[in-house]
Every structure is written in C-alpha cells, then in structure tokens.
Image 1: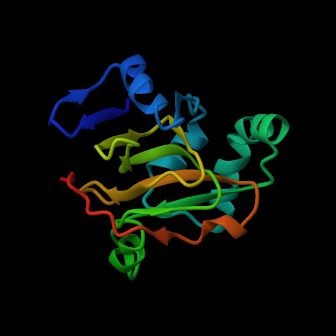
Image 2 (image 1 turned 60 degrees about the horizontal axis):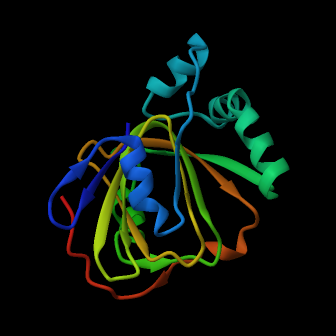
Length: 180
C-alpha cells in the first residue's frame, strides 16, 4: 500500500488520510487488485518482459482500461517495465527526477515494483507519495511533480493516455526539498 511523506518528516500509511492530503491537488489514488491468475503473477515477477508478454499483462488488466475509456475518454495504454539492467536507465529516469508538469493527466497503475511521486502543493510545501503494486494514481494535468525510483529500480506500470501530445515534461526549476 502507498505511503505519504510530508515535508515535516511524518509518514502517513492510512489510505483515507493519504487521499485527504492528495485531494488538495485533485490527485486520485486507489487500490486496484491485479488478481491472482498464475500466468499474470509469473509475468509480473519477471524483471524483463518480451512484447508479447507485455500484451498478455495488458490484456489481463484491460477491464480497468475499458472503464477509463468509457468514463474518461482514454484512448491507449501501454506497459512500462523498468529495471536496473536496461541500458541507459539512469539517463531515462533523470528526465523525471526534476520538477515538471505535463499538459495531460499522468495516469499510472503500478502492477509490480515501486516508485515515488513528489508533489508541490499550492502553498509551496512538498509531499512524496510512494506507490507500490496495486496502486492506481491519476495526477491531473499541470500538477507540479517529479518521480524517482526506489533503490530496487524496478517497476511495472500500465500507463493510460488520452493522446500523446501532452507528454513532454515542462520543467519548472522548483527546488526539491524532499527525497530519499
């Protein structure tokens, strides 16, 4: 389950308390079970996945995608699989470790591994949300945030898109005061 680190160093682990803190930014956090299909769990336990294996994972979880298509107009989805053996992983991740915004919502369903989203609140304070398997997060467009991997550098997440135009990070140069 997710945990939220506040700027004063306190950590919230109660989902309802976390949701209340995130509500000021209109961020949605939900727990969505991946299920217990043995084939799915075997794939999620692997570090790397072939394209056909990624498609199998997506197909197994497409009931969530159908909900997003019907309710919010999402058009496409993919599965991002990050692990330490990916060539250039640190360069790839460095693009997201600085404060930035996007013109579109950032929607992720973490199905394995973990990572950390940091956010700048309207009053300038900062919080960090550690997301883990079965956490679904929707970060609204233009929300100032950053993302970094935990020390394992492993995550599998379904990304949902209404389009591809809003995905260029717009860096804000806000200094990050939190972090591991």
